[in-house]
Length: 422
Image (tube, rainbow, N blue to C red; front, side, top):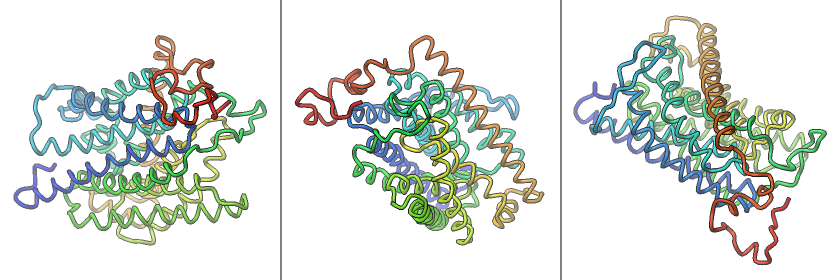
């Protein structure tokens, strides 16, 4: 679609996507720091190593496998094909970078959900299958010539393809791994023994994530449709910031009213949830719609986290809430707002908002079920054949002590006693 543009307009368009792709890599760094900050110090090296290893895996595996699925002529709108295509033109290289970063972000979401329990080699093998096959298929359905795109399913910057898919894959892993040791009482009550070890890291992480979302949302809008021009950068940037800000403020007020005190981790989750929700269509022209999306996102943060805890879904970073619930809300909200008329005109969708709501719901269900079911099968095979979770007798020591010859904070353990017990 980019090749249809010529001259200086094409150059500006490609540069904008290139800049957005490079900026979106900050999401991986931000997720890594948030994960390290909200977990225990004895697992910090493992968390950082996983995110770096998964970034490398996403690039190499997508180049060898996933890229050729998305670029090949499909068998039909449901089944893509695979055709090895050697070399990348300058146009293709820009799109490759953006799409590979989408894969890396999904892997980082999974790493955050499974923090402190999953062995690195099991996660790397799962990442290989995700990027080689599972994720390119759902991206083809929405962003290329797939049936969801043909039906009119709207997902401009990856609310479904990236964030919902990451939450679905992470949920499959979480169900097979179970909660961290001592995380829940037999009654189901939450143990308050796992506070975030370094909130300063989490603080840096959410700001890097914020910057990364500006690139991801803008790049997705530029690739989605050539009608988006470089001037869209301002609208996407402002809307992303507004949605995140409103979500944080609403969550702060709600937490204060419900619990009597503020919670910094809830504020982090609220910011991410607002940015995920707006990614369904980040260039909305009316500010009041963006405020509404951010407002509801902020309201959903606390009850979503509470619900997942009651279900004993141990998600230390809150990715099931921010990525899963946030994506679902943003995708449904697009059809329920007055902006749908503008989207419908741009995409030649000749039907009512409630018809579009049904299409959005169908797309959400298809993507979630595809990624969840296939991920569960792959992870179950990994669990049976290779092992998925760290040995319980080593879990108290931390994953840093098992797979790495170093610790992130060695001075904390000079006495030989791990301060992060149990």
